[in-house]
Image: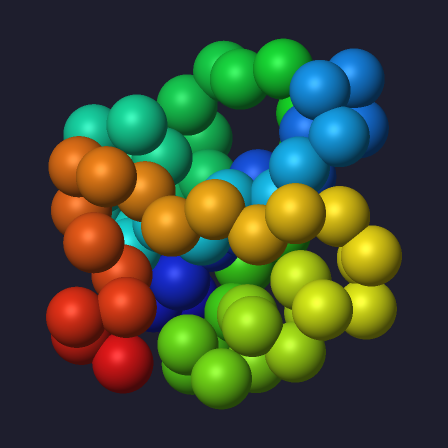
Length: 67
């Protein structure tokens, strides 16, 4: 997976990361929420839109720049 979405229901947002991001670590980094992996940025964005939650881009890895 190249992109990971953190679904944080407790804080009501979803956040997109690149796989190599230190905050994500291929979806293995412990975070409050659930990691879901995607092969493309477009797939990640589509999933985020379906959640109805605010969509955040990681400010560390900037996944939108690599889409």
